[in-house]
Length: 364
Image (cartoon, rainbow, N blue to C red):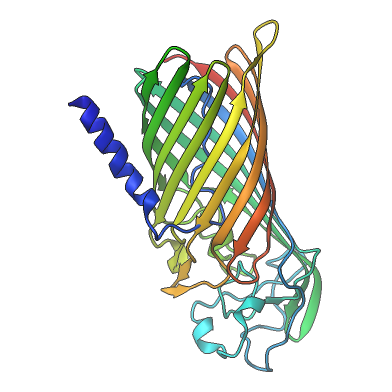
């Protein structure tokens, strides 16, 4: 009976992952990390995501009077330019404006444009405290508390009627907290161990989602540290461990409610497959190199029930990493680089990502 319930539990959690509605995302649903053995741990992680480059470069000016801008705007950006955030701007702007010319992190139609160059860049940095607690070797509970620092740089920003050079926007603050629960099921044979971990995660709107510039205009919802929305993530992870070599695979599907500024992030699907090998050294040292692939896909976001054209798409990353372990301590290093991306509109491209983690394992 318990085995039947377990199988039913897996099927229910897997249904959203098989949905044709699953698309990908500008950021990962749930940053997965687990020790080689399912153990409790406390960890501090640093993650860095870099963006740069476009499918098309340059700028085409809209007709005079069609963009809603102000000529002398306060210093929301470090060098003195910020768009006036107007919730109904898109309805007032001329429909002839090409939305692909609007910066992806400013809701379409507000009148802030960029001359897209190869010197534009974006960075998203996260420092997160992560606690992982394994109970009776059957259940696993996780919490994640992130602090976000986001920087956007445009080499040429247009604030009509005068262009402005070298413009940088910085937003930082507490992100939304994640709480998660997994059920752990093992299958053993003489040489191999199979571990199945279906689970659910909830992203709670505890973060700062209404950060404002120095002129009290709210920053774009996409670059806010928090979202102001509830998100629900269905997850399934599988690990095969054969002697000293193994494979980790994972899938997740995320759905979000409408959040701050009436903005709703599109539903997203992530998948990964990572191979690893355990190398034992002297004095209890262990190296675990790994390599594989990671995939993201998402729907377009919506803002006041309108699709945002410069959001959503799909991207595939190649991934390599190394865990350095000694007794209860682990240093985790991970690097990702995009090998394929198909983004909606003329979005800025994904570039490299890195993750560094310091983990201390313990027994409850």
